Amino acid sequence: MTQAQVSQRGIQLSEAALRQVKRLQDSQGADLCLRVGVRQGGCSGMSYMMDFEDASKITPQDEMFDYDGFKIVCDRKSLLYLYGLMLDYSDAMIGGGFQFTNPNANQTCGCGKSFGV
Image 1: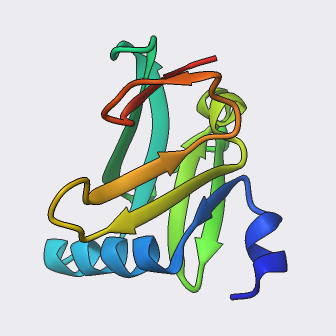
Image 2 (image 1 turned 30 degrees about the vertical axis):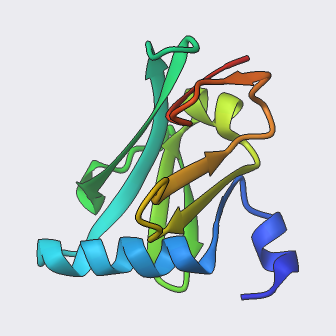
């Protein structure tokens, strides 16, 4: 995957994050997509949400991004807040896990799981 391909997507996924979500998907034992979105709440006003979902639940109101056969789905309302988001993953013992870098956020909480616009 080239940088040009990545920058054309509304939600970007690092190679480390792609490896991790594929690993988690394999452990689920089903062909699932990753739904990414936002909801009200959290320290800064809005929280990120992320979960696996059966592909049959994708609706015409969703935007879908394909990464070598792995699908990320986001509803259009959430995408207004997430467009350009970079989802990364680190396996560091302190501060590891999924990390969200959101160019639309003007504030983030210390844990990095919520943001404000």
